[in-house]
Image (cartoon, rainbow, N blue to C red; front, side, top):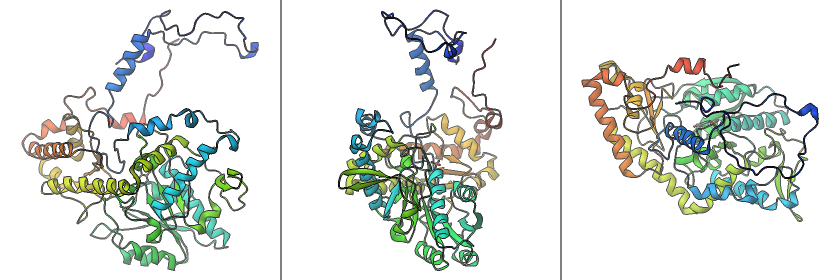
Length: 479
Ligand SMILES: *Cc1c(COP(=O)(O)O)cnc(C)c1O
């Protein structure tokens, strides 16, 4: 496919505006450009075809099943996009005086109340722009809390090996040392291992739940108790709240702080790089440290409170990615008290439905029921046939499926992680199960065929190392 710069002819173009019939008001001479911009000149027809072709070359939830584990690629209702695009939301200026932004502030406050209800927390901030950003913010709250009490010897954050990779990275960014603890044979936190490391130097523990094996931690109350008894705080990575929302609340399990990925669970399409929202909820003991400004209700209406002496300050400009919050509120309002837990139950049902039909061929990591996703190990298949998780993932492309998450979590060899979400019909689940079962047979019969997959996509197997190490992201103009 040609780049847009390689198309068109000088002089061709689209005349959108009528010729000027008043005197041109030019900026001062110093700001004027002396060479032409050399933009590509295309007709509207060519332009339209170019973008359609780009869209054809990509794969999204609108193209087909996208069971990318840990990413919750669910279908997002279009009405939420329409609501976020309303002029009063999309056209607001972040510096607008608060008396002219009461509706937007009401959205922030209402969304905060709903998410407090869902998480069991006392306050929520929408400033962080992504999940990892939320983790970092939550850890700064923990740090500020210990500091405010003069408790400065707490330098360590405990992170189980089944945590999401961003957890240790965020803790390190926040200036903590990481203490890794291994999982038990059941894929859950090993309580003995936790007892051995928790102590006076523990600032907190970060728990991803459901963990990266898709399992709800078994000893969750013991875990939060152990850390609290040692004087530490407990962080809940709730990026994947899809299995839990409306059913169980981190606040009731003893957690002090949680982040949610509104762009995964709460109806903002993602995967193209944003915008996202890593909303952070906390218990009252951490509320004084939340980023400023905070939306507060006063007699004169809603306002933005800046003067909060213990606040960690700002973590993003203005109020975070506001449109994502509008979509989350629209989503929660349309689903309501019954719809939210029902969505979670269907997400869990869909994952277990697929897992049960695959587990005889593809061994499942962890035991028992899964939550919203499950992890298969293809280690044995690779030993028997030479066909790797990568080969299976590439083969799925030929059938019109987006591959599952590969080689994650790191604690499972040859991992494929499947998250169907609640928005897929049963037929899609059945179809993918059938394809995965037939690929298992093909791996034993014609492994070469799978090493060479995909066979029918526009791009076959790019050199992934080269693409990662030497990406060419800009068009260089030839002089
Ligand atoms: C996706 C995810 C994150 C990170 O979220 P980003 O928005 O990509 O920064 C953190 N934890 C878990 C469990 C996740 O699934």
